[in-house]
View 1 (cartoon, rainbow, N blue to C red):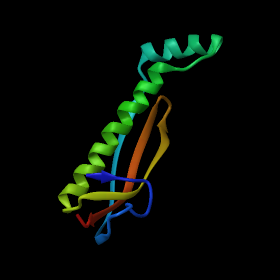
View 2: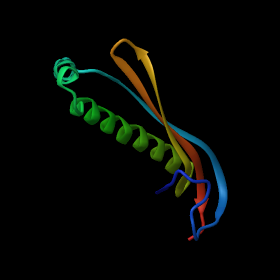
View 3: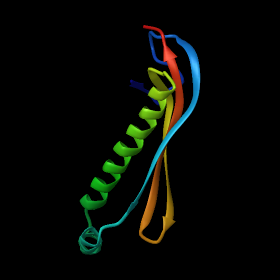
View 4: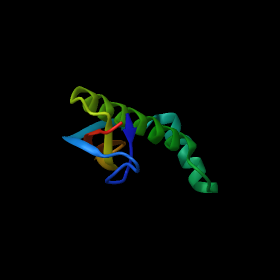
Length: 105
């Protein structure tokens, strides 16, 4: 499965547009990560616990989006985008979306 955040794939032609595909996940903060993040806010630096949480969320949302594209018979997703939103205090959604297409070989 080819994933790009552009409208086209260089050297390949879009033969068919299958439609919008999406994947999402909602994750809650972990108490242990929250404590460490609070300490890091005092001294500064990367909040590695949250970085890992977002990385896991992106992977899961992307995998769900790709599975939906495969069900439609696509071999690529163009215009891939990510969005986040707050669901409640301590929980956030990561949303991946794009256009499923069939590319020439």
